[in-house]
Length: 354
Image (cartoon, rainbow, N blue to C red; front, side, top):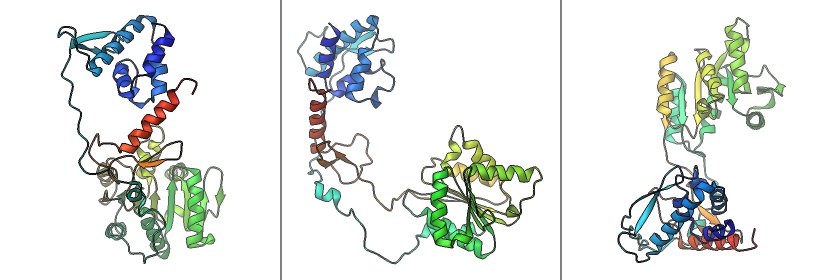
């Protein structure tokens, strides 16, 4: 079989069959689309080509239900060497029937999207709990995106400034530090907010300082070496935004050292929406800091997530049969999404479409 003939045959196969064929041959094949999967399979060595072709034919016969003698009806178990290791075929699993309930329509999928009506702001119970705990100890806040972590940071900053304490707000990125500088200058007044990054230094003696975590780590290093910094004498609150960076292989040590060297009189507030093990972080802070760390954690999203599929033609449809994202694995896709997937596959693999 020539390369062109094999490519044409591969293009005629469904993606699920190609992934079965790629198992053991292509690293992380499940991340590739159909076109890239075919191109990767075609790059196999001449020694592997015969095994690839025979395995493909066997998969086609197996999944098409072609009647064969019992001894010939076998399926390949593909090894990582690219060769076929034959084993008796298992009975094909029955196709799961579609759920009886009708799939969600586009109107239900888009319902509620838009600007909500203005309502008086009422803090959530976890926000009040975090502020109450922060008055006496360190706090780790691990809640979903959009839940209101910034409210806790702003209220804690207000109380610290009223108590004539210095507040340091750290972020992992210069761009985020610049954004917070603009936001906090509008909230607290330009004379109350300063910024320290590698590229910018404004109002460095302000009671609220915005900086990258590396800058704070360097300030703490200098203080440990005997260099006097009056800002650290009055430091009452350190807010570490995006604190999941503590797990970063390259930069995580900066967060660890900052926490270790942070003055004991200052309270730590760690904010994140994506820490996988916040209890471990809180336990670690408890072991190295003078007071037990308080953990605030919940999983309920204030703004629910929905998954949809937008076809290049502009057609939009829910991705799943339900309006929200189902929690069950292998949840059934929306019939319209399946149709659009097939349409896109046909359009992109059509001869001359490349």
